[in-house]
Length: 451
Image (cartoon, rainbow, N blue to C red; front, side, top):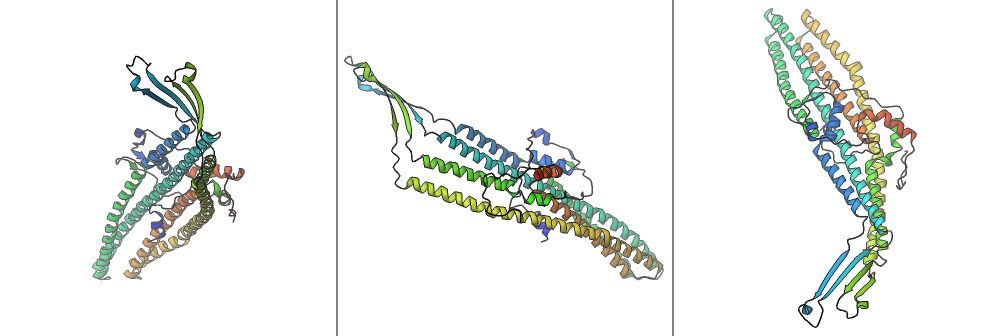
């Protein structure tokens, strides 16, 4: 299995986006019924807005935000109604009943802490949404690279089929003149048929690639893709890579862990306040009392917060979870750093390989085939040299396109590792990163992010 095949498999470790992420755009369902896609980045934008999985995450984020708005309110008041049934219909007594209204009053600061915990949970979902957007954008670009790669292979295949038709005519002419043997004619025909088989497979691959693109972007089956046949060359602004290494704490996975840590801090503070009594204000009217002055009663009730280990164990559990998040932050920071460095290394390797094929190997293969063809026509060369030259050129052209595909694919991985969704954000977001110092956000700086 090649590296690219491993790269395009379903992503297990999420890619990351931080403060770089543009706000997601939610479109109406009718706006996703696009008939023609003319640009790869247009396809990414549609996927971000129309992908059903992303919309589901957006709805869960909205649901959590609604919950966060409700937890900062007082608990519902409680109304109690009681009657003395034996007083009904009794002439000696008035009808007896009791009405009580009770309002729980939390300890000062509890409602604020509940709201902070709920807001932190909303930030966790926001980080998940950001990770999903980066993962989706990267997946679309990888599928697009594979689609363009197969299209380019089909174009190469068509050229070589035409080339073999030309060669077959030359070989048959030489066979008719007695200067070549029948095996050369059969071998030339066989090579042409192999290319016909490959063309069938490539057309099927292109259809499957288009199907994957439609699935990722939630597009109808009638959508056509008319993007340019060439993958764009990729470039990185000077100094951007070092700048991104210095702001790893802005990645959404880090922000998600930081939000979880804020939530644990609020829960821990709530657990500590749980050691204090909870009060309830009460007003009661009891008609069973003979004197009117005794019928109205107001007061306060509260619990007796005996520990018996349950509160201290709860606090110890929260402390342990908070420490676990701190260690996870340190581990994740190293992962993000090394993932970004590896993505940059793979991308640079693909650039160097593509440049080698484009500048040296491809011209050499073309010249070798031209020389072998001219020598074969003139009679100074044999068919084996012609066959070897054609196969060498075909293999070199395929590997040239593979290197270009890998360059684009690794650039998509680098984009995701740097926390970007749209490639057009590179210059703008890099300038923001370079000119704005990173925020601490309460993260533990246990690992040097500038290594």
